[in-house]
Length: 294
Length: 326
Image (cartoon, rainbow over the protein chains, first blue to last red):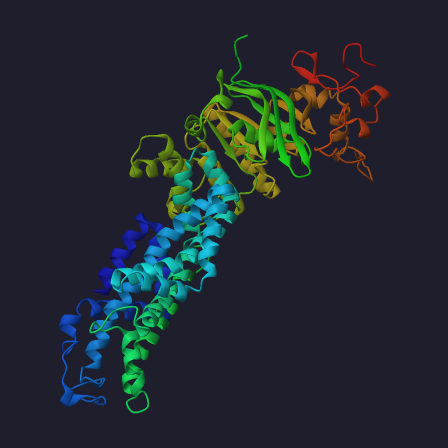
């Protein structure tokens, strides 16, 4: 198996050098690989929640309420006697989904706005970036709360609410990278071989600002997971009985002194996810920059 | 009159609008270049050499730059009249440029092979695979083994990178190559190699070339024609022999005098006193007059025209003007 894997990497490196090289460098970073494996595991568990979780997430059993971790309920049960492990597994679906798609939304929208603002400069730049400044002046969570409150609570609106709050960050990163990159000689050289604006932005500028974007997006994903937890904690996010880590925390906080396991495990799940994303983001930054010598 | 020259620049003036005033970077510059010929464009820093080159590429950054007047004909077609798309087709295909610093003129996150293939892909309807195959050939043409196709610029030395830059410029067999101080960032042995490479490839592909440099030695080695620029103007222009052996303009004479000579032992090199005038405030008369040892009163008010003293040898100096104060 491992030999086959190596062989396939060998051939791919001769075709698509950039990604194969990045993968080669990422492999050397043990903590990043561990994080990647953990993240993939989390995603798989979330996707196959139906088969992995020991109980349905909404199965109430008042007779077994407030149980501490045991062989039947590995992470104990909550005030309705629901299995916490199952709820965390299902909750991961929401957190990862929202985290990924809200950042995806923010990168696409913010990236395009930032790249256009930086590349064309002048009036367009001013209009776009002042709008971003206005968005940035409102605290991200407050903006998300406002948007979530304005629309009805629900998965899609939570994604948009969190995504919109993140847009200005990506717009700024991309704009500043583009501003410094477009003055560089290799961009002028690209213009000299007759490359179009679109080609220059897509092939020369974007790959050169990938590193800060990837780092920001893994950090942002962690932030988004926290935001969705906060929104749910406030009751504006995912509505019960759908489990979500933040709403689990919110729900358990009345019992924190008597039954701390109800708070600890969802909290740990949030922490672990964010930790893994941060380590992976760091590793990716190093790996994606071919200028860093091996 | 028909445009019989391959490249013909007529009365080109390029200005930059800045907060401190109008910078007159290039003023009424006229040049001709025939197919396969090389022209050395010599001048000190700020004389407008690179601006001229960018003008030919039609890549003057706008704003702040504007082409105030003039025409540039390439094979009889005024390229300043072309729209953006037509101009893009020309760049890299008919005209290409080699930049000064190979450290910054390559994209650091794109393999060198891909960068060469890119130029081929833009201009020729080839599949990615075919373009990359051609790129390997081009890479080998500049003396880099094809196996290094997938390597990144940081894995190459300065001289090798400049070869890659040359490979990109020559990938589509351009008719005109503009080399903007291609050897300034390299050490002397590599300079010689790169110059040899450029002149050999140029000869093979019958490419015309404009070589921009400070180095009169380099020009003597590679070019047939020389143009000396000062404060955005041509001051002397002619064949290699005209300029090197029959130097006429006081500025050119000063330039040659400031080069160390291995035959004579001198403690100090001769220099031209003073600095080039501020391009936002060029003098009314000859722009060189404040530094010129042959300046006369009239120089301050009268900017002489470029006059042909011998066939093909042009000088802009009052002493050679008809009826001038010789």
